[in-house]
Image (cartoon, rainbow, N blue to C red; front, side, top):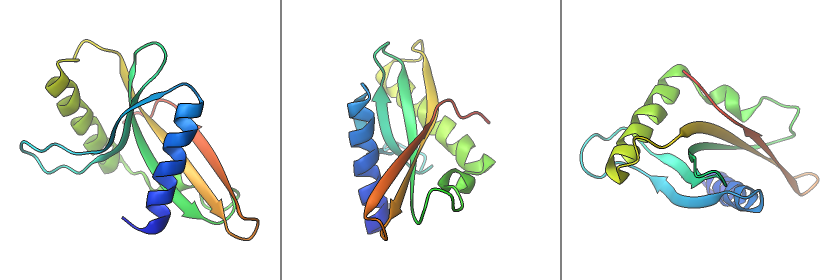
Length: 123
């Protein structure tokens, strides 16, 4: 992962914690079998719902091309497969869950960052 990606995930995790989420896992991947990829962050909201976060970081201003535009149907299918594997491993198949997106924009000109949280991505 590149430096922007690492910083983006750290900023996203801090943002989510500040907004009441508990972070359960970082960079989770299925160790027992399928090499599907990873989920950047797995968290839980105040209601106990499990949330799988895809984090994308980008240099530039928020008005430029949005990071979520880089999430295609194949990526979403992979995220949902990994989510099912994680829930099965934890014996949490009965829990409510969803997949969210967190976009982080680093504007090096102004030396500021902005975070956009989109709840409930679907295939």
